[in-house]
Length: 177
Length: 285
Image (cartoon, rainbow over all chains, first blue to last red; front, side, top):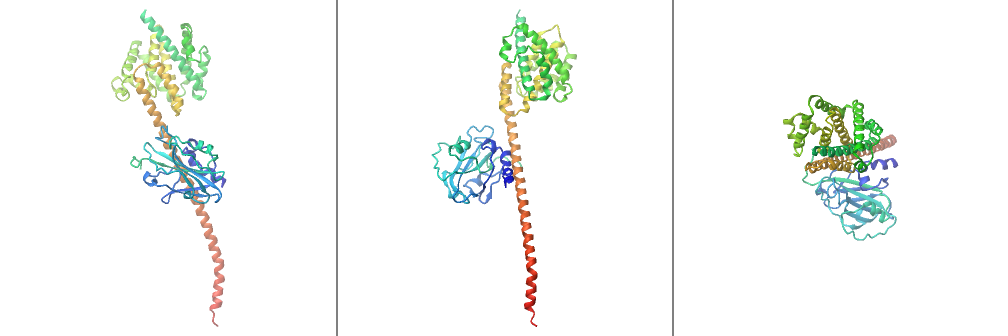
């Protein structure tokens, strides 16, 4: 299991999610993110049209007394070559009980559908395990310039317990193959 | 009178150029082993200050010393470097051709020609046909930097001492050489921060409008390089994920097969019992 954990993070390192957004961590909780039954895997490309409504996020870990915070961000705004607005916040759900899914949590920041305009963006789901049930986050003034690391420090969330990311670009972008 | 003043100016400029180049080289040599020999030779010609500002304050006499040292050092450096062919060979040969075949005036003409051609940003593609050799040389050296820097140092080298024809040519050649070398060393470094000093390095020397377009091209090139790196990273991440999935599915498949075997075994053990029972029960007599 330990070995599995370190291997699972490899695509996140390759995709520079670990580094750009997160520090190195060891995944300890299994998280399934799926749009319309289609599971999100690291580095896969999804079309903006297929991610227009919020995904189902299941947490296979912990128990009903443990609580999790889910954050979804885009570190490549407005474009990956000069992401001066990074990170863009898409979604925050808190107080998700273990073994359940995100619909059992409290949606603090509503889901904003990905609309990548310049280049290929990464969209990252990060799961934190809360130290206790609580935390009503204050209103976040802007979705831009969000910082996942700072956020985790501010609310004492520690290192992530799971993360997954997908790629997306403009629906009409020229694609190879 | 006027020309001598010009010479002095050229001299000063070239000397500072030299110093910049050399400090660059020595700073780079710590990281790249290929240029270590050059650094050792330059560091032995010690009166070089490490700061550019200091260099500019120095008197002309010391400049001369520096210049001579550089000549020796750079020749040394050239000879030493010949076993590394990739970047070094061609520029060196071209320089020697100029040196052997053409008198000094033609060499200057070539410089003027290349200067005139420089401002056109498309000189790389269009200019190579008419002027043959000279343009190819500029194209060769201009790669990521605004070329006037190189041209200026060449001019100063040629104008500095007419008595001694060989040295300026050779040194200017070696200057080109180091410049080229530098650009290569920088080219390997993809991060933008590392390239910023080099662009300002060019800026100090360059004075014409070409600089802007060169910079822009440079920036575009960096962007493109970063984009390519991202693309590679994406692909690698994707491949990695697929490999993980394959490993995971294989493990699961193996587990399910084992489970099936166990079930079969269990069924096989149970089956004969059933058969015997059935037989005994179905026998009426």
